[in-house]
Image 1 (cartoon, rainbow, N blue to C red):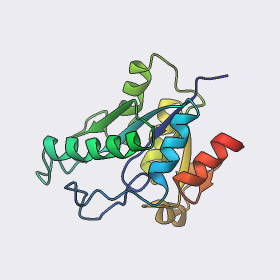
Image 2 (image 1 turned 180 degrees about the vertical axis):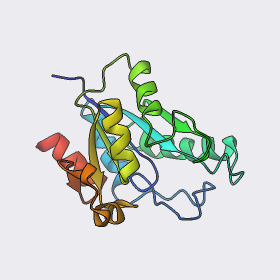
Image 3 (image 1 turned 90 degrees about the horizontal axis):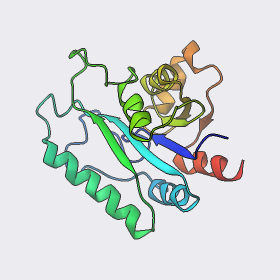
Length: 181
């Protein structure tokens, strides 16, 4: 059996997404049940990583300090419930920068695999977009989709890449499935 690891997208999965980018701690608002869901995974012995595109950095909409402040808030909220995230990996590049880390490319997931010293085969990567699904598949991870964030729009798109991808209402539903089948 593979090690108990879950990789999560951030915006739209853990916190509310915004068409105008999540630029500050005040705009970083956890989705209902998401912090509790991550804490439950943590209590069950899962190692949790986050992989998130943050092109707002390249666009000058937020600074690395702004991003660190949001991630500290996430970690603090989890710590209050006895949970933790092992690592947060982000792509600071814009969509036209041609980097290997921006989803749908697998670079961030591959970095997580290297840092955890593990193969990502069978490891769930929970996202809300087609880019998340494609990145998971390219890295050998198992894509899971939530309906929150861009999830509903992703499903409406009807991409053939979604075939066989488990779809859940939200992160809490994903965690219920992971913990209780």
